[in-house]
Length: 390
Ligand code: GLA
Image: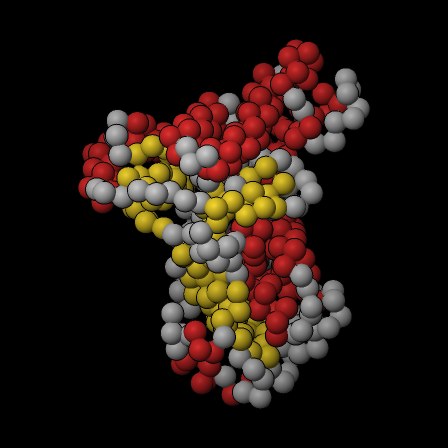
């Protein structure tokens, strides 16, 4: 049973029901940097996750143990919670801060967590922490929050405790994921449809460049500002525009001359990427994996050249796949500046194909990349006691 030792040591919580939660990582098939522009995305939850055990206490103490890194966080639930210098703690402090506003939090808890999601790999280990903890608190305190509310609290935590002005894609994928399906999410209305992912003789493989550029959060927030700048200029011509999602290629052709070159490129990318999400779903419905793969390559090119969030290592990994007949689509995934590429690889000799990319990466970059063969799984859930052996 996961966390058995920790549970048996929690004298102070023994009267309360222990609750186990599993919160998965996500991939994004297509639709990158479109969520905070209120466009479309196509993410899915996968078989890598963060695991939590929580049990309420009799007193006011909130005691959290990060098992992987051997670190702790302890506070009184009545304390005013502010961001900490330790990044992992901010997910917990932020979520607890927002949950407390319900007025239903009357006591502390013991919590332990661990995760097998690689950090900084673009698989949203952070949304898994915030969403999983949110679901754990919701259940323990019986807060009756919906999945959407938990996702929004997790997003607020990123904005105000972690400092990344992220969109809502990661939190939605983590909360609403369904086995074998991606989530076609409209980030304006927050309505979504499940998109069945049938890959036939192909499978999903992530290749982790293992690069973690420091730029990630500053450049991410900068992209968001650049998009807002583009929108405010275009709004002068068409006041009906509310988000960059509303901007069409016609707007850009007619009024784009007033945009600075950077804002123009960002805008052009977002318009095209939103269109690609819709085309990608049509391709999947028509079982046209070749077209789906071609759209992934286009997405990567836009992210590298127009949105400028790729890097040499990611470009190398994507270019390496172009030489292979066994890979039909590849692109960088997530915020960018490092992390993973997502690849659609023929099952027949996938190991060999992926290993040859890994060895050419090593030769060129002098460092190791790593591959993860992944499957699309269910979103964040409470595990019942019978399912604890995972
Ligand atoms: C990060 C953010 C998401 C999204 C992606 C890029 O993962 O957390 O909200 O913007 O980058 O698509």
